[in-house]
Length: 314
Length: 269
Ligand SMILES: Nc1ncnc2c1ncn2[C@@H]1O[C@H](COP(=O)(O)OP(=O)(O)OP(=O)(O)O)[C@@H](O)[C@H]1O
Ligand SMILES: [Mg+2]
Image (cartoon, rainbow over all chains, first blue to last red; front, side):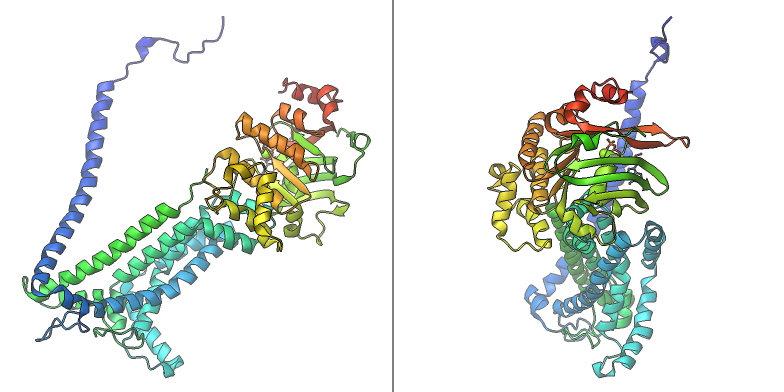
């Protein structure tokens, strides 16, 4: 007698797949997932809709040219002016200072973690870094106001730093986005296939040459995506800039003086009592829409960049 | 340990001399007691079943194994009479003289041109870069296929072309030795033949050591063949060792060991 090669003994009556049931289940699951996906789309559309409606109302009363070319932002005054670039400049100034901190430190940290640190160190250092991302931003905010600013004023009195200023806010903003920039860059660097490093060593490259010319190049799209995510965080960040940069809308790129970012303005107005339907109320939405457009274009750019420059291995 | 017959069959000058070499990954002894000579300007094939340590031995020659934490060597390997693992040898400098082509093609995420220029540049090449790139690509029989798209990504060409690009990259730094770890295993028969022809041309200038699983390939192209095998250790692990080393002719037609005869005739295992 030979061994049966059929584990079930070849009895066809043992097999009774319920195709109609699995088809029905498939349909239910499909529907559930579809509904979840739809929900997030509907919510986004709803937010967009309200933003747009109020923004249109705003622009019925304030001409585009004023919005873009006024050099003052005084919507709460009796003679209001609506130069959005006053707020935009503050937002960009703080975000830019933040990037000056977060990009070099973040990439350096990422390289150290993935290329130099032993596996065991990376295993606990990376989660530790990510915990920093969990520090509430209001804590960073008063850290900037109560520690960094006084510190800078003592150490560098010649700067003439005001109590509220873009510099401290930007520096601390940079620290707050550092974990996300470092962590995502590290993911990108870690994902670079080892075969590339070996190829580089095999043509006689040193470790430094390998990292700079091959690893970082291969991880570039991921690093840029990390940086852009950091920028959108910095642009949308609210508590740090509100607490440390002040509430003084000024069209300037001077990091030493009090300024007001777009988000700070929204906090200031939304926190006070604005009546629905007034121009002040609509101003909020105009600023909100501008902020939204800025982060949206950053994300679109990042999406495009990653698609364009991502290398497909294998 | 079987003695090998290298000293009698090899009369040209010696590029690598492997003497009583053991190789460890941590405490795991991967290959034990290897002795053989790699002759200059010949093709030496390393064959044997999977896991017997062919890649390990190959990567000793350019010290690429140094990059693996815990990996270390016991015994001596001489490169042109010089101790390869002496502290005076700079592995980076060594790897310029001993090039390598990997099993899976791994071009840099750079343009075709840069893939070749990179190695030359970091090694301080002062000559005409355009010429070097062209020469290397011609040397790898790739020039005609890519000469109009040198600025395109090295990853944009076909698998066989990528592998020839990797060969071009390896010969661009003008090494003395070319190590190849199953360079054709992912290629179709035509690309494989192209690369074999190429190796025949390259061997006038380079010493070539190739790992291959393809018996016909080893028989077709190599001058000498080393057959590795693995044996069970008491701890349950596998330990690689060199069974027999001789001219390819001998290994394939009249091997001294029964295991070799079984392996090359496909009756192995
Ligand atoms: N990086 C490593 N760390 C630990 N052990 C390793 C490492 N690389 C290889 N080994 C072990 O060393 C032994 C020999 O491996 P090697 O890669 O040299 O075999 P091989 O002959 O090239 O096999 P194949 O034909 O499958 O490529 C194997 O037991 C393998 O598990
Ligand atoms: Mg191998």
